[in-house]
Image (cartoon, rainbow, N blue to C red; front, side, top):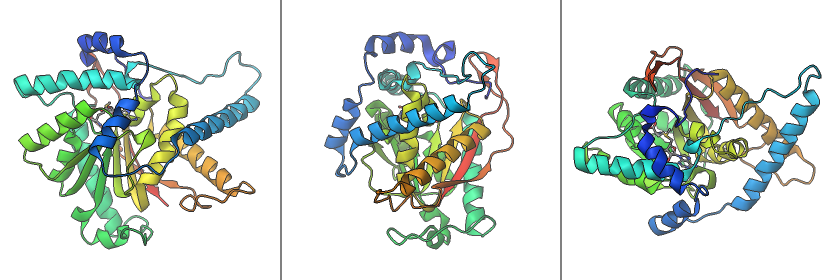
Length: 339
Ligand SMILES: C[S@@+](CC[C@H](N)C(=O)[O-])C[C@H]1O[C@@H](n2cnc3c(N)ncnc32)[C@H](O)[C@@H]1O
């Protein structure tokens, strides 16, 4: 596992914030995002979220059974490490962004840059190179998509790639991608405060074309698919909820619906190594293939028999950085391509 963990116990993450958030945490209060979506969005929901939660629970219990049967008898306990923290709760993020918004209004501060500015810049420039390589055919050519314009077509004009940043926070990663030449940029976050902050910063910094929406990625109301989907720290946060393992399964299900065929997902994490992310995607691929082959299943046409994602590349060198007073090891940034 990577040495640096996304946990609120670090004093730098803000003790004051933690106290405020602790008062709020009775549940993760998802309905707030859902309600605000219905006010702010013209999109409609097509997904049965209860069903998806039930499917994820089933998938997890199958995985747990399989793990138990593979389990070596010379161990007392399976060594699965389940880390939970307040960062898994929406109430924590609502309190955080309420603070950051008032800091912005009073002092003009942009708020926390998760994993540091250098990592953010690396993610943006590395992602641009990756997309350019794909366009120039240095990596496997993307698959055509009839529905909303193929990635291949858009490769002629990289700046027209549609980009979605899930769990965008203050939206600074999108600003960085705009500096790299992308200009069809959308950021979503389940915290309304994050979206307000991201909008304020984008206006202040002259990136008025970036769109921001309140949306919970696990119950997404987005109907559009994107050629490039970014996640910096969001899967980490989701995994820290007490139901993290189930929510991670729901995450992959949702995200696979948000990436266009041939499109790219770039995940940056400090809680999972590159190998752990690749393994998690392999498990998701296997589950998807098994589901599509179940007798009597009409089948999800998007999933089909191909694995949904394939590993493409990862950032090979990161600088070390300070977090919570200690020097950390590498953060992982991994790209997967949607089949
Ligand atoms: C560690 S922060 C990273 C923020 C931003 N990506 C960055 O790099 O600065 C995690 C973000 O994910 C958001 N988040 C967590 N769970 C989410 C969910 N289910 N749907 C949408 N956003 C979520 C939080 O509100 C928070 O803004």
